[in-house]
Length: 261
Image (cartoon, one colour):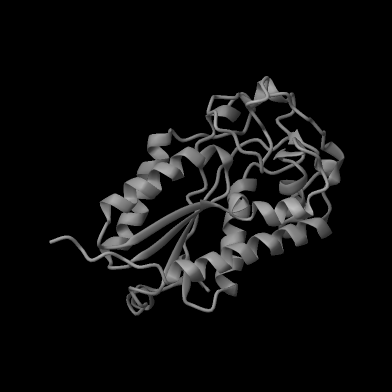
């Protein structure tokens, strides 16, 4: 595993262009209830990426995350910072484009923030088309990749995992326990207003609409952080890292089309 920011230019130049996987973690800086740090999503995306890269037998370089994401739905809570969706896309496009310009051919975006979901879907398609024949681009949200493994470990009912919840709280308790203030945690099982909608982290809905978090929860927490423990966080973390490491190795073998004439 390589932390990209710690490498020298000659060390990067010596990497195998075809087989090295570069990971770009994306997250956010936004409210995470009364008890969790603003940087939760980015901290977790970065930590999961580093651990999965360490476990992967092939060469994998993890880039430093750009920290901020698309968090317009959190802006009624102090501390939240949002980029425009177009800004986040432009930042990711420039980072990926820089790697491709140096001849690297396998770039994976690892997202840790639900609000970035639509952006990374579009990025995967847009960048895949732009760099077709030069590089293979993939994008994922790590907790969606590992949703079955997470579901097998969860204690909460539907709605208990959403934001600053059982899952995220336990994960931060595992990697940065000093940042969690459990005495301030408040559980909220929100009502999104329709059976067609869900706020659960592992839920899926065919319907897309805007939900402002201040309308869903007075504290910004969606779910039940009281169910979180450091031990549970370790189990969640291992499950997520295992799924991501397996995907990295699969991605390393994906075919890359010949560059069009």
